[in-house]
Image (cartoon, rainbow, N blue to C red; front, side, top):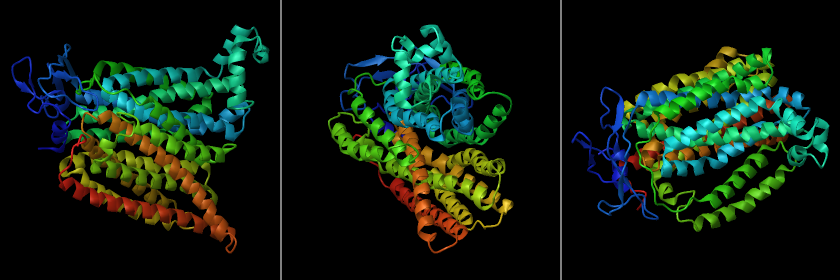
Length: 576
């Protein structure tokens, strides 16, 4: 019996299925893997049961008198559904990668410093990272497709508001207060609301910038809903034999978005103002929303009776993540106070979680070693990858004295390698198994990072291009099978939660990897700068940081080999 089927029986669903409208035996809703999915590529659900779960249980036994038939049958083409999810993934990836190039323009437009303009990225990162786990839990309870569609709509609204933030707030100020000068007057309605916000949030930036930050927060809220449920939908719509291929397509969209985003943003800024960066995404996002609404359905029935959502834990976790992101970035005034807040909130979060019937950090899932080890590999590999991504641009511009445009073109090789190998590794993992592909990808990553370690002090563009392409190929061949393995270990009932957990874990790895890369580089350079020339100290510090990334990847390889032993051993269910 396949692992996914084992999880289904562990989670309390009836193993024998139900009878469809045509009298043929079908699998129950969570167990649709492979049912009626032959050459047509269509998943159909004509009649299934929705089981109300007792508090603390994921499923109820058969014959408990509380089953309810789903009245509305649905059909969806799984490849069309994958196309809708991939389009949404592409738009969010382009949006996230293209805005960075506009930061200098935004600083000049609003008359603010580079430290202040960081909030455009930081607000988005905080909101996305803080609420993905919560939305993942909501998706498991109410239907992941509903959360994803709502996320697409909210992201579209946020994108529209971002595009309008260059001029709309001033027009509103004029309409409500009778003149822009009235914003500072106590009797102004809009000035009374926005004036204090702008002074307290980012001093001296004006209402337009605050409006942009609010719009980015709305946009991030929609992105969190999409990220928390997108991979869950892919893993539940597709059977295990095709899951790696499907997840590989989403990795392809991420690679294309990260590769094209900066260049697209620069091209737009060359002939239009910065709001156009958001405006061009809006029509595509509207199409993605309509496609999602028409095509997406979750095969897993919602859980109607369950413990209350852990909203307290969600907001404490949001405080933890916000403090970590702002404190570790070091680019804001008083960052050290956020680190102290981070330390103070850790015991608070532990106490809150202990009192919850179904905590945000689900201990039942964490006890599954395949799930935990897969996420640990994700964290270590992404943190190491981010350390490299942070260091290499500075090396190219300061040591090799390349221009920003030349360095950007060279760095695009990493995204290219990831985009090419992501789908291919998914197909390969479906045929030979994810845990046979992952060790090979980590060996490739270790070799690529050794090549980065030996980057010469004199420019060698072909050598650097090969290094970066191999790094991208290694990350692409690792991420797809690892994500597939994690989602298989989680099972369909926990699919949205697992998807949100993986995305949150990835974002935290990005933040920690960036902070660690900058901090360790500064430490090594200051120590060796006392006894070595500045150029030699820079090169030595660079190689020390890259050496640490090699060690992290080697540790990931050891964990991956251990995962193969865990997979061979009998796995306990989440409820045990």
